[in-house]
Image (cartoon, rainbow, N blue to C red; front, side, top):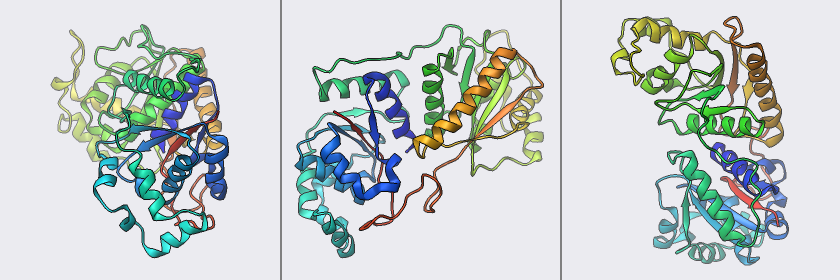
Length: 366
């Protein structure tokens, strides 16, 4: 759902049109298929190893296929789920109870098998979290052009590396959820005309006033994040974004950092002639934990996420206007989507539901 939120933002920026994201409609699942049939001009399927096995996703694909809605495919992980659907008996993916639930909506496993076979051979764009942001943006541009060749794109901005960013976003390299969250924050900040960029090796940090740090459990072992923080923390104010279910290391871990046990400062990719000691690394990470937490939930509904994001951007703006002030350190908590439950924005059980939320799929309204 977090990656779906990022791709939705990209599509809104590219088209200037309303983008329907199914995870934003979990309180009204019974109308989901009607919306796909009647209100959606293009269906974008975000392919993961689970997408085609989800009750609601199967129903959306069948509905779009029968209504002759344009269907586009985007790969979100390394698994070829379309090929799996061609090589296996799709009819065996659902038990009799699930098939009965589908029948309530006029959908049979035979219809699903036919719809899935129609996906074979379609062009699949790459939007995996490991794909560079610029390449993701190009993939979304090609999706829009292929779906509506005559549609005039209305980009509000085009991502390009900022020459002198005032805000730099730092996240754990290799953590898909952390990286995607960082990109969502970047896109939203760009839309609000902030001079912002993602941290990268060789990034110009001289003009950076605020470091926006996406906290994850693995970040305390991440060499690239450590390199960013030792350069940013001494001069930039900090806004941290934290996953709600995250556990912080105990004090002994930071003592180990100060002794060079977990991250070797000699391995940090920092520009010459800068050199840092283990104590610098430990203090940089400690500074990120001395914060007051707010909540942001990019994986849930637009209304909740939008309100929380406005608060984050307001904090960033306050720090930018105030200038570098080490007494002002703010933090933000990012709530990971919870499994199960009926929290705000969490899945609800509709009539005929299997009790699971639909895997993320996007619809572009005509």
